[in-house]
Length: 487
Image (cartoon, rainbow, N blue to C red; front, side, top):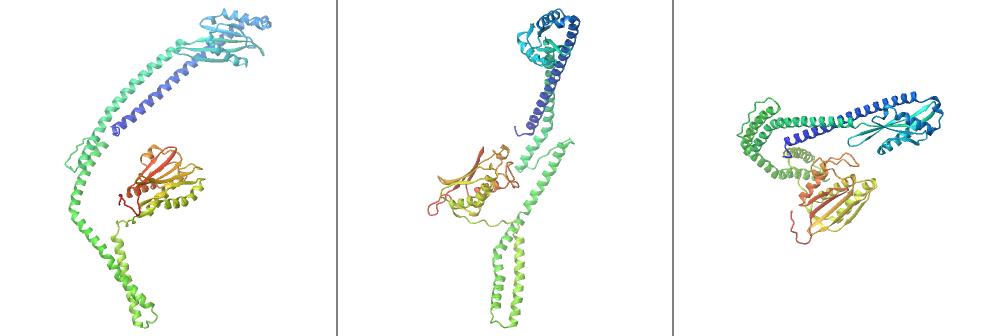
C-alpha cells in the first residue's frame, strides 16, 4: 500500500493541502493582527492629540512657573475632569520620571515604565501587551513648554472587545478553510481513484504475462495518456508473444551455432601451432650462418611470409569468434593476508599523508583461498574510500584477525555519516556519496568489492555513523590442514 501510486499521490496532495492551509491561515492571522494593531495605534494617537489640546486650554501661563510636583498635581486634577477618564487609566510623572499620580493597573506598570524611558528621551510611544482575551495599550509621551519638559503622561486603555471579535472572525475563517480543503481532498481522492484504477488493472495483467499467460484483453475507451498506455501495452503484448514464438523456433539454430563455435575453439590451438612451428623452424635455419643455398633462403622467406599471413587470418577469425566471451578467471590459491594487508597499507600511506592522515594497523596472520589480484584490488578500493570520505587529520584504522572459521578485516574512519538514501543502496553500481574530499568517483568501487566478496563466499557489511566501519569476513584457509570451505 505504501508503495502504490495512489498512496504516494494522496500523501503528496495531503502535504500540499496542509501546508497551503497552514500558510494561508498564518497569513490571515497576521493580516488581522496587523489591522488590529494599526487601529489601536490610530486610536491612541487620536487620544494623544485630544489630551494635548485639552491640557493646553486648561493650563494657565502662571501655572508653567509652579513647582514641578505642584504642577503635576494640578495636571492630574485637570485630566481627571476630562473625558479621558472614561475607559482610560492614567499616570503622570515628573520630568525625572517620578510618579505623581497613577490609576494604571498594577499589571501594566511595567509597560508604563518602558514607555516612560522613551518619553524621557523626547519620544511618544505606544506599547502593547497581549493576554488570552485582551490587548492593553499604553501611550507614553512628554509635555513640553518650549525646550523644557514639564511632565510625562502615560495613558492606558483596554481593547479587549476588539481583540475578542478579531479572534472570533479568525476562527470562523479557519473553520471555512478546513471545510473547503476537506471537500477538495475528498474530490481529489475520488478523482485519483478513477485515474489509478486502470493502472491497477494493468499491473495485474503484467503479472499474468510474467506467468506466461498472453490471452488477455484490455479495452479502453479513453483517449488520454492512460488510454494510450493500455493500447500500447496490448501492442507490446502481441509483439512479445510473437517474439517468444520466434525465439522458440530459433532455439535449435542457436544451439547449433554454439556447438560450432565451441568446436572452433577446441581446434584453434592446433591450427595456431602449425604456422608458428613452420615460422619458427625456417627462422632458425635462416639464422644458421652455414646455410648458403640462395634458393633455399628464398623458399624459406616465402614460406615464412605465407605462414604469417595464415596466422594473421587465424587471429582475426579468433577475435571475431570470441566477441561476447569473457576472459578466463584468475586461478585461486592460498593467500597470506598479513603480508598482503601490510603491503597495501604501506602503498596507501602516501595518499593518506596527502590529507594529513595516517593508517594505523593491527593485523594478525591468517590465510584465505582466493584470487590474489582481486583481493588486492578490494583492499585498495576500501582504503581509498576511507581516505576520500574521512575528515582531514583523522587516522584510519585497519584491524584484521581470525574469527572462528573466518578471516575478519575491519577498516574504520571518522567522517560525515552516510545519508540514508545512499546507505540503503550502498553496494549497487553507480551509487556515490556526497562528502568526498576528491571528485571523479565512478560509484563502482563498493559494487566491485561486494562482487569480489561474493565470489569468495564471504560477507561485507558497513556500520554507519560518525565512525564508518567496513567489516569483511572471508572463510579462512589452512595451507597444510583440512578445509571445509572449498570453491
